[in-house]
Image (cartoon, rainbow, N blue to C red):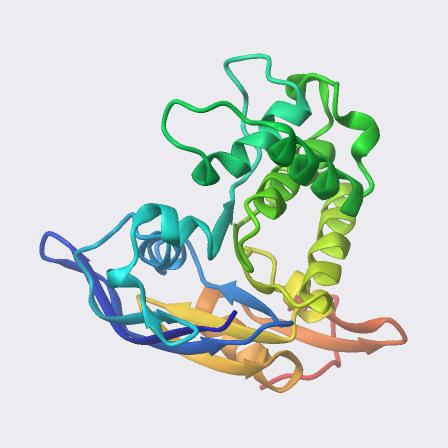
Length: 263
């Protein structure tokens, strides 16, 4: 499914948060959403999910205006993967993933064999089916994040919104989760991933959407778009880009770093 956002504007009371946001995301694409705290990334996701309705402009999925969709119809199209957080109740991983099928049930119905099958297929797709009977709160951060991704896959939506999904993970688990996310994009999902680490965009994304003070500062393929000048605008920090056999690496400018690509 494709996602098109046109002239999207949103304000909290009289404070503008999104100002004329426009972009198009395609099936099979991982679009990295970058920007400093307060740039509007989470608000953008909440508008797409239908949680914030007081926006102007249009949000379309495969040409359908999302204002015409019910919450259940939206859930068939868009899934949200949050950051990991502590659970109050001791749900099993299977139960967490089954929650992704709730929009297919009537209000008082319980998941049946069809929903169980969908949940297990999602776990198997990510290679974590052996965790199905484990308590969610006993998992590592990386395993918890993969369980959230499995829940989104069980929702059977083709657009995935991931709001800083690796922010609380150690380095190894960050890469493990991002490898999975990139594979999902290659499988035809449309993935929007917000991150505070622009290096993730360089290594994993197809394109980058950079937000600055609620506006689009840049949009395009990662390598030509993610320049030192753009990163300076977004984060107020001077950096160099260094070319390595494994791809471009971002390093902050200091008295001990020279060379690299600067602008």
